[in-house]
Image 1 (cartoon, rainbow over the protein chains, first blue to last red):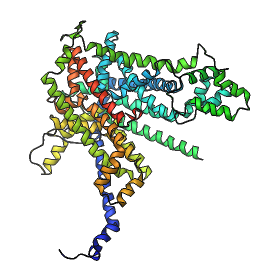
Image 2: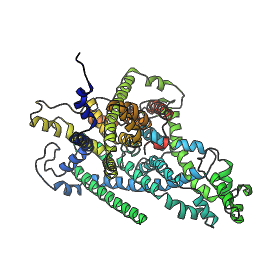
Image 3: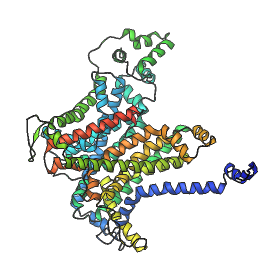
Length: 285
Length: 332
C-alpha cells in the first residue's frame, strides 16, 4: 500500500467541499424533469381525451384529421345530455345540502356535549375510511329495506351521505383556530345564539366551509362506485353512461363533453383563485 | 339571561373537549373583567341553571345525529344482519340465522381472488410511495408559489370523473393504442406490448387514479420536516439514502401511512378499473362483492364479504392511529 498523505485527497476533498454550481444545476434539472413527468402522467389520459375530441375518425385509435363534428353531435345525443344534466344537478344539490348540514354539524359537535356525542363523533369518520363499495352496498341495502325506489333521489341522498363527513372535518379544522371568547363577546353584547352563529362564527370559518364545499363537489363529480349501486336501472349519470357503453364502444362526443366540462372547471378555478388573491390583498392593505 | 343554557351545557360535560374549550377561556375572561359585574354574572358557571329547551343546540346537533344514525349506522348494522341470513340466488333470503356465508367466504376460489387483490393493492401502494417521496422531497425546495401551483395541478385531474379518465387510458394502453403505436412506429419495439386486459393494466389504472391520495399526505408530511435536522444529518456525513431512511422516513411515517390507507383501501375495491383495464380476467375484492349484489344476487354472501373487508379496514385504521396518525387528516 502506498503511503497516502492528506494532500493526495485534496482534489477529492475540493470536489466534496465546494459543490460545483453546474453540478447543482444538473441536479435541479433532473428533479424538475421528475416533477414534470409525474404531472404528465396525471394529465396524460385527460390530454388524450381532449385531443381525440377533435379527431375525425370515430375510433379513438389514431388521429386522422381535425374536426369539430363531435361538438355538434354532442347536442343531438339525448342520453348523454341527460346523463350530464343529472351529474351536474346531483353535484350541485349534494354539495349545497352537505355543506349546510356539515357546517352546522361541525359547530354542534364542537360546541355541545350531548348524549352519545362520542359515538356520533366516531360514526362520522366511517364514510371517510371504509371502502366505497361497502358504503355503496350498505346504502343500497337500506334503501331497498325502506322501499325507496332507486333513482335520482337515492343517488342524491347517497352523495350527500358520503360528502358530509368531509365537510365536517374541513370546517372543524378552522373552527378550532379561533378563540371561543369572540363568540362569547358577541353574546355578552346581546346577540342571540343564532345571530352569533350567523354574524360571528360563519364569517370566521368561511375558508373551511369553502374548501369543504369544493371537496364535496369534487367527490360528487368523481364518484363512480356509490352511484353505481344506488342509481337503479332508470337513472343515468355520466359515469354510468360511460360504464354501460364502454363494451360497445364510446363515440368521441363523450370526449367533446369532457373537454367542455374541463374548460368550464378550469375557468371557474382561475376565477375563484383570482378572487381569493384579491381578497387576500385587500385584507393586507 | 341567554347565557345560561350555554354555560350549563359547556360546563357539565367538558372533560374530553380540547384545552381551548370555552370553559377555560370563560374563566379567564371572568377573572380579567370581574369589575364588569353584569357580564360575569351572565356567563358565570355558578349561576347556571338547567334549562329544558335550547333551540340553537337542537339546530346544530339534531341533523348530525339523524344523519349519522340513519345513513351511516343503520345501513352498516343492516348489512351485518344480512350477512347472517340464508341467501339464495334470486335476490331474496330466508330469515334464518346462519354462519354459512362466512364459511363460504373462505372458499378457495374466493381466497385466491382475495390474495390477488391484496397483492395488487400492495404493489399499487408501494409504487405510489415510490413516486410520492422523491416528488415531495424535490418539491420541498421550490419557492412557495411554485409549490402551491404544483399541488393544485395534482388535484385538477379529480375534476374529471375517474371513470372517464380510466376510459382515457384505454386509448393509451390498448394493443393498437397511442403508446404501442408510437413505440412500434419509432422502431423501439417490434411487437406491441400487452399493456392492458391483464394485471399490469389494473395496476397502471390504480396507480394513476390513486396517486394524488398518496402525494398530498406525503407532501404535507415531508414539507414539515425541519431543515435543521436535514442539515445536521448532512454535516454528520449522511448520504442521500441515509438521510432518507434515518430522517425523512421516521418523521413522515404517519403521513405515509395515511396515504397508504387512502390508496390501499380503494385499490382492493375499485371494481370498475379491474373491469375496464383488466378486461374481466382478474377479479379484485370489489368485483366479488359487486357480483354477489348485482349479478349472482346473493346479498347475504356479498354482505359477509363486505363485513370481512370492513374488519380488515378497521384493523388498518387502528394501526394507523397506533403509529400516531390523526383521523382528521385522513382523506382531506
